[in-house]
Length: 84
Image 1: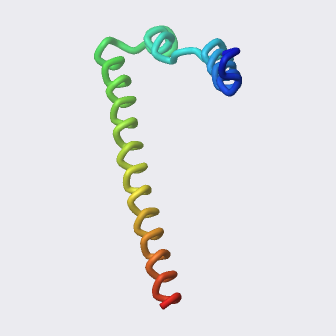
Image 2: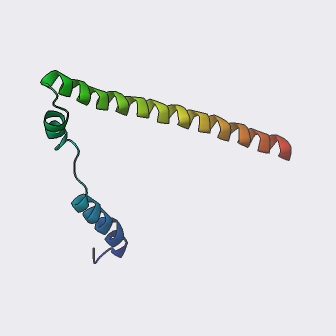
């Protein structure tokens, strides 16, 4: 870090975030067993729902990015036609 002081801020932020965050995969089995009194199959459904939610969010983000890209292209085309 002394050779490149620009790395101090990102590395410090990573150290703080990494220290203060807690992986949710660790307490989920305990949460499912003790608080929800869920069986193994119900826990499997819970983790499958996490996966489904992740895939749904990625698809939504992709669709949103495509829509924004189309709007950007339309805006650029309007700008070029106005200049000509």
